[in-house]
Image (cartoon, rainbow, N blue to C red; front, side, top):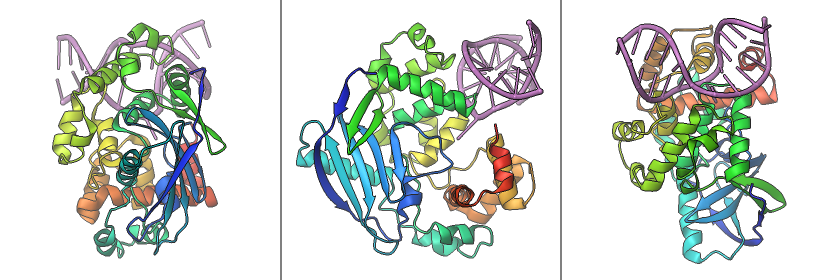
Length: 325
DNA sequence: CATCAGGGCCCTG
DNA sequence: CAGGGCCCTGAT
C-alpha cells in the first residue's frame, strides 16, 4: 500500500434525516456480512472510506436521533476542503447506499402479522438494506468470496488492498480504501496471480477493464428493473447467478431479489422457517415467495440479520454450529 | 503423503 | 444441461 497514508483532516458536517422509522445500527452494520478493513463500527457510530468523483473521503456517521425521530450526523473528512456541490453529491450518494429515503410503512403493515417475521420486524424496525460499496467494489468482494473459505477471502482482499489500495487516516481511525477500477484494468493477470487470488485474477482484471471502459455503469443501472440489471451484470466475466442476486439486493435494493439460495444460507433459512435442517432450496424459495411476495428478500434480510444480532447478544447454539468452518 | 471441499463460474461435449 | 477444471488452503 500505498506507502503513503492519506491524512484527511479537513472536516465538514451535515445532518441527515432518514424517513422514520429508522434503525441506525441495523442499517449501518450487518453482522452476517463479510467484514472489510474499509469499514469500522461501534454502536451508534460508523466509519468508512469512500472513493467518490476521483477523490478519497473519510465518512463518519453518528446516531443522534431515535427510531421515530431519526437524525444522523454526517462528517466528511478529506485532505483538501470539499466544495459544497461535492458535499451535496456525497450526501445524496450515501442516502442511496443506505436507502435512507425508503418508505418501509407498506412493508411493515403487510408483514407484521407474519408469525415468523413479525418479531424480527419489531426488533429491527426501520432497518434498511444497505451497502457501503460502489458496484465495482462490491463485485471485487463477491469475487474474493467465490469458492473459498472466509479466512482465505479475508487474506485475498487484504493483499489486494495493500497492493493497490490506500490507507486513510481520519477521526483517529485508519481504514483502507479501494483502488479505482482503472488501476487494475491495465495490470497483467500474471501480476494479480502472484497475489494468490488464483483463477479470480482473470475475472478481476476483466471486470476492472469493463468498468473502466464504461461497459457497465452503476448510476443508470439503478433505474433498471431487476431482469434488465441481472442481464447486464451477467455479461461480466466471472459474475454468475450467485453473485448477481447479492448485487441486485444489496447494491440495487430490489426487495424481491430472492431467487437463488446458497447451501449455507439454505441451512439457516431451514431452521428459521421450518425449524429443521436442510429443507430443499426449491421449497424454501416457494415458501418465501408465497408468504412475502414482492418483499421476499427484504423480509428474509430482516430474519437473517435479526438472528445474527441476537446471536451476538446471546449465542444461538445451532447457528454457532453452522458457522463453524 | 494424498485427497477434498470451500458462501462459483466458465467452458466443453 | 451435466460435469470437470480452476488457485489456494486447511482439515482429514
